[in-house]
Length: 198
Length: 112
Image (cartoon, rainbow over the protein chains, first blue to last red):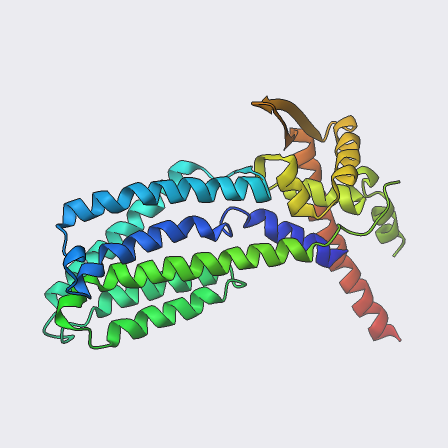
């Protein structure tokens, strides 16, 4: 019974966080926004502002569809955390990432144009997520991949897109793996604690 | 040992029943949850979940609100303050008893 209750407790605490498919549209958006750096195809050589606007519409649509999918399949529950705290944390992390990118640009000569500080930042994020929820081991791997990718010799045109590409891949991979973890945990509960109603 | 058994017997039976404990534990992570999410979080069948929720509502440990979203019925469940205190106290008590049982076991092993 203890194992069943431990699983219920874990699932309830991480129910929202494990709905990882919600991150996939943003990941795809980040990847798509950097496509023009990796190809000379005329269709993909669009101006930055136009491309972002074009990509934002399907992003919002996909996010809404994913939300509806989770509500239909897993129901909905209102978490206890304050929205204000989460928003503040998100702004803080974004500022941290922008500062890392700025630092990389200043240390271009030292790191031979490799986005090392950004890579270490993304790696640290992955470690922080894994540190808080050790069962999500895939974030440890994503952290390692982010750091390793930052040490690779990126072609000059593509270096500026490193952050969006790595973050996009991490959001997609992490989101899908979180979702698979959610479905595995829910399936693992079976039909409850196998006790007849007294 | 006898004090340990007294405490064990004193555990609230409304809360201690495995399925109801699972429902309360699941709800303790949320302000409110709908029927489907509770079903997924506990693995209980709809009928089983419904019966246990009724018992918990009778004991004033949960509050159930029924509404409609269009033509679809929607059940929203939340812990009452009494329910939240009961499940938190239950887990604290169980953790304490677990530690006590560990010490008792260690003492018994050293005496044998």
